[in-house]
Length: 158
Image (cartoon, helix red, strand yellow):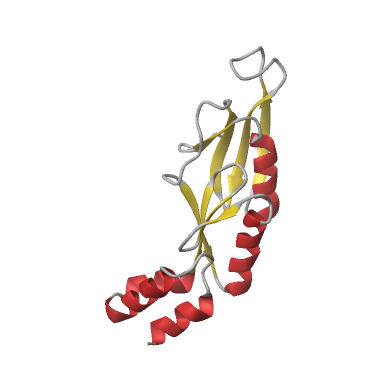
């Protein structure tokens, strides 16, 4: 059954490779159908992979091999909630060490240009608490690339 709402990610030509990486990296992630072009299209030939249905952490997605016309941007990102430093490190390192790049405040980008926020739950809880606790956690986060859970927890305590 096709979901009512699906995220469509535009790739140059590597939708299937990206989908396989996501399925291998994140829980509740898997590859669905792979569709091949029934005829030539502007950025490919008959038989090339055109779209890939996949799920990332339970979110249905379609990867479209649309060619080089459009690039990914930080205007869209997956936000992955983590429970501890080990989980934060695992996802961050999987993305960055597989040709991705680090950014700031828990953001990184995979080798296909898709942005990811690897966000420990303690950080979100600090923001939700508000007040001085939120400010301390926010100020600590602003100095980080990958989030340091123990530093956020220390900032929360003051």
